[in-house]
Image (cartoon, rainbow, N blue to C red):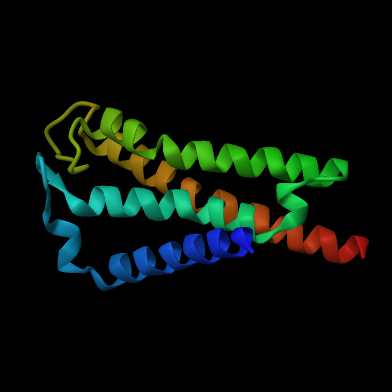
Length: 145
């Protein structure tokens, strides 16, 4: 029963964060209390990015407790996806040079256009990787059964 609640809470977090991001909620631009100049959206996005692989992990007993080589491989990939999500803020900070993740035309690399392209590529991978793992799991499980 506890696993079901963890899964549902994680899934709810993914949907709430997605809705906030899609609608461009003003909540995202509010300053984070105690962190001058850091928008609340930085941490809201981070929670959503970590919740996605977490929800997939807790949503499947086969991925949580792998029995076959395939399930073990997908479990390792899913844990890697979670680690990528946890590292999103540090990696993004290194690329942008700020916690607002603003980029300019003037900077040579950090905070510049090349870093911005890497930031968006990394962010898309953090979102896409767990979804790809889930789709792969569904397709491969359906072929086995």
